[in-house]
Picture 1: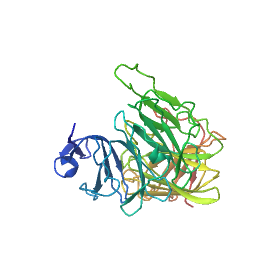
Picture 2: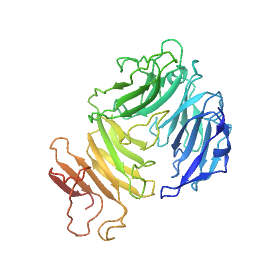
Picture 3: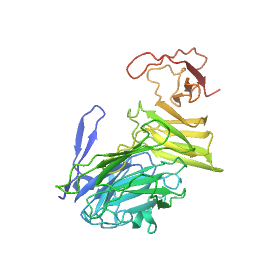
Picture 4: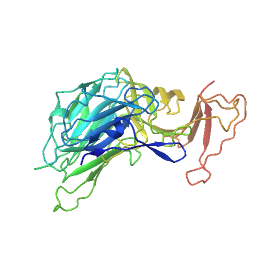
Length: 389
């Protein structure tokens, strides 16, 4: 049913005000899914809306004050499709987010779409390759570097279709070109699939896959959901659990950049922590990077939604870093500045917990007590190291 969408503005205390003006809340379409993304890397969240019913999709660009202008007549909003899902990822590692759109005409296949972000506020449609010619009644979608080779791959779920239904897995060749993988999963067939999500469920450094299933007809039995554990390979990885303080605690909207030497090339990868990564699905909030044969992280850069930045160098691989955004409201200005923070991680070989400070302690004696999430004092050996001489 065609109806208006709604937008509510949070005042920061948990109270919301309905926005009643602007095309974002006055357009009337059959909307199916939404994703927030800072596609133009200007520090604010823009909104993409997927519309079904063979209508154009909608893209609203934030001016930084919460006012939105609408894209019209250009990719990716110039085609009449039945779109269900949108997923964003930097598929070519060029520092901006590209767009995949999952389409379905409800029991009729429709080609999906891929758009390359040109970096100047415009997009170019990809017109060749498996990813845009396979058809499918597609709903869920999500990017992840499941093979840890340094580029994001794509999984797409299909449902409410005729005949044998199969989900799609596409491998990225490192330049943003995708080929369909027919062997990574034991079984790609599905009775009907809706949402999906990537996350490292067993904490082995490789992302696992969860698929939510559906009834393909009212008379179909209710199917079980599907879980595929990733067996991994010899490639390295890095995971970052970002915790906001001045920004929201889940660090939604935080962009993370890492640079490493992979296959003899210096490659910078980017992730943005998002509250939704496709239709009825959200990937883990822990940012995951595949590193191939890299043995160290040359540079790490975090841009928090608050506007603060963190820079670190020469970090270990095969590690989960817990990084907390630092504010100085409760600390003396000569003890800790706003420009840095703290990272906490467990050394994979020794089992020791490492705490690395990214700001100078100004000659002060620091006492650190570590507690677990239940408030119990942590008993493992803890070592402190100042990253800034």
